[in-house]
Each structure stands twice: as C-alpha cells, then as structure tokens.
Length: 121
Image (cartoon, rainbow, N blue to C red; front, side):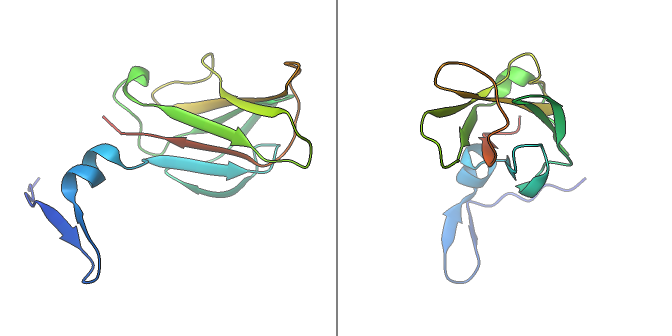
C-alpha cells in the first residue's frame, strides 16, 4: 500500500487541511424514517428496527474500538419534546445504536432520526 503525505487538499476552489479530513470530519451519518428505513447515509450499510424506538445501523468501515468515536443523535417530528440518544447496548465498533423517546422517557417510533459519528480510528 502506498502512502500519500500532503498538508492540504483542494478542489481548485476550496482548500482544506488534511488533518481536518483525517481527524475531524464526520465519518458516518444516517437519516432514517423512524422504522430504520434509510433516507440517506454515508458509511452506513442498512438499518435495523429492533423494536419500538430502538434502531441500529451497521457501519461499512468499522472503528477500531467503540470508545474511539463520538455520536450525536436527533429526532425531527411535528411533536415537541422528542429525544434521540445513543443506545449503548447496541453501539459497537461495527454499528451505531439509537433510541428515540418522548420527554417522559417512553420509547416511540417518531420518525426522522438523524445520527452522525466522529472520527474513525
């Protein structure tokens, strides 16, 4: 395997440092419809509906360990007070886990969960 060592990458208009691309950019994200059906994604192969408000998304390129990344999650719905959180029991180096609930903590399939994860190790 060859190694390319450069300080910046450019498309001719915008230049970005390679440290941002390697260390700081989101490495996987998913937008799904509330039953793990993917509307759009990057580095996510599919969605799994594990039950009410409980979803997992396998990664195409896994992390070296589950502790090496940060997950953010949100849910968009016409109802206020909805929460999307990382599901630690389903979050592994090879997949993301998310739960969606209302502000009382009851799990539900509210639709439009969106997750992103930080750096691949």
